[in-house]
Image (tube, rainbow over all chains, first blue to last red):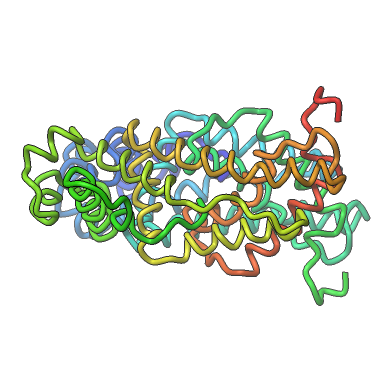
Length: 208
Length: 208
């Protein structure tokens, strides 16, 4: 959702196992970006990563298994939420982070490949859902802080506010296939904030 | 975007050419739903539709050509916008129409297959964009009518309001892979309307 480092394979220094995982995930991402999920094969990943086929099969099982682990790694690398002191500042930071991820050639193509994979593979769908729910949960905290500061009504649903920031960007990216610009991101913040201030994100029955 | 009839092949009575097109598009949709874009082949469509291969190749050129024509047909069949007399009624009708399309097994799977195809095929992306832009343009009229009635501020961007209604539904459908329920649709209407009434959809410099 928002911007992790561009590659999955650049982290986790450690022993041989960690190095093998880093190489395999880096290669998985390369192959996804270049050929999509339907072009991803275990043998090609093993060959390109310089890792034995049996290791790749034993550890990841399938190409869907590779995608699941890649998305886990990308989520692990993603930044924590900001704390700019205002909800507008935090939501703008979130929107620009999502925009940055979408606009990054490598990361954007990775997300699009997994979004495509998820339409026909249940494991990929699960990996995608887990990734975004972790990011939504992380950023929902900025809404809770804003409610405590009195910037937004009591009972405002933080996860829903964060979903609302991202939705118009992804809608243009993968559905209407229209450009996703900084203006689109800024407008999403303005509109979501207007609705949130009007109480439209208050959960019924929350006492807010 | 919103709900056309479930199948592309059920319309356009007419001569042999129209019947061939109907059969080929119906079969294209069947194959997309069952096997996705990567499983779509010209030969299988021709065989299943009972049409000569040369006809299919000559008339549609490629599987992407089949998808382009299918999306054109689905757009042609889509309903015009409602005119319930209130912007809330019209936006609810729009949201429920989108929900109906997404929730329909055959249509929903068709959209998801084309969304997936569009991530790696420029013709499919163009077909998808054309389909949604036609639907957005059609429904933007309900916003213009609301502005004339004084329900929404002058200068409110109708196309952007319609995008905002759909965005949270598609975000859940294809990105976070969360359930898209009637409650999700209703909330999208409430939140979009709150932002629109607050002037958050007024185009800068429109005089509104």
